[in-house]
Image 1: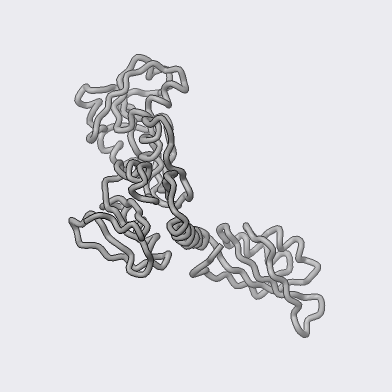
Image 2: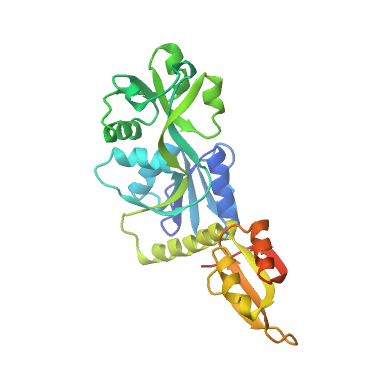
Length: 297
């Protein structure tokens, strides 16, 4: 079935943790998603003009770059690896999504002892990310052979394929299980929302803008808190400095308490107990910290 060109199209990893977190993001943005089951290659939103293309993660940059999908959610590691092999970037990153964080790292056998980057000179390095690995080496003037593997990269030293590996690390458990230790950082990654640079008509552009507004609102509320407190008016400058990430708080005089005000603020950074203690020390009282369910920026 050909795509409905009256709807937006978003490329999404078919399965795995990143797929689950991406779907949750869309649900938090108010989308009701339906698909055809375990083997379905597409899905759709019932209450928004959006179709999902459920594909392999390394196919997502191609779908977006070619304009088959206006949008895609993919790890920066996959996106950058693809981009390094292309003459021009035909997509742009429009939002960092705050999940799917991991690191691409050089790892060495535990037996290697003290590591220095010079030890990579003349060595073979096995990886599923040859472009990123090659860039890392070139930027440091290291001449080493990059061996491309599509899986089981951690087995390369044990099998004598390569002396080192360059692979994604989240918890480090896979490296530990294979007698490897991360020794150098190559690339930090998280899930991102990307948009095609191919021309799209005004109607589609408006749909993209509406969806981005929802997603940005979800991202903004993830760490944001709504704070309400009472304070002496003279303490306002100190209290506003303490409020994390707050802009233009609302200040209202308290009836019956001359010289005192109520302060309401959206804090777009984490609010810790230490923050509340500092506010109280400056004279704040009746401090309430509440989660924000929805926010439109």
